[in-house]
Length: 303
Image (tube, rainbow, N blue to C red; front, side, top):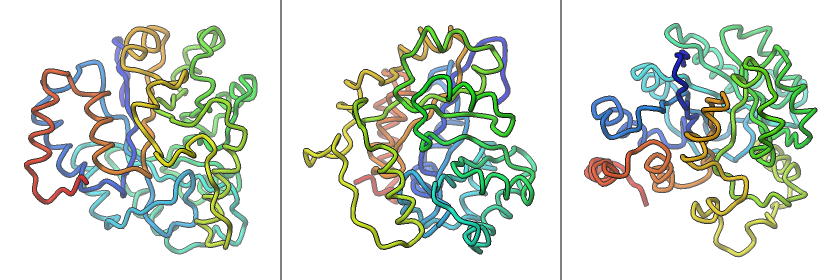
């Protein structure tokens, strides 16, 4: 993720464990056919967590790929891996979890490119800083910081290399433009959220996921933004006033000095993740070529 004088959009992609099979096919194409893809963007990281990971948050993960294979893949393509450890309800007794500590030991060995942790809990942050010093840290959007001054205070914390604001701050252009260059380099926008900007229970939604990951018996949280039975829809996300399009990135955010953009989708299907890769990274005239190469891999189940 080295910066150059020409601003590059770095995408932080979902599904480190969850969509291993998709990236196993996509990344060789990305390396071998750069002409398919916009020259103003690159992959900043791939993030996620395996299933049954109590430090996990944001989404209940279903990724069951071997952590060793996942690490081998991102190392082969020189991509930063981010562990999504954004559980907001962790207590001291959870810090000794064997599986999560083994993941930190494994991903903390990466010598070629520093890996990161997306984090909510300050308790976990202090533990990781003490015990796994090779990671960089990303302040999670699950904190639901909608007040700009509080967001700015979060950006100013030395603990974090990146901060993902609540999506409702995406279009606060006057305030965003007043940030310093150092602050702008730390901001990572969530581009494709489908949740309504008027949602009042977003934090409760994330807390429900945290409880599930801890194995607590809790009622299902029903999203009032997506209560029509359709669930996530990319076309609907595009109509969200907070949606960040590729034209927004090229014509507004990059010229303003921002370069980091998060694509959500860990809880979705691989076919929809492919649509995100097509829309955000692939030139229109080559989208059919990418689709064909992906579909020709008979081992990849997109549906």
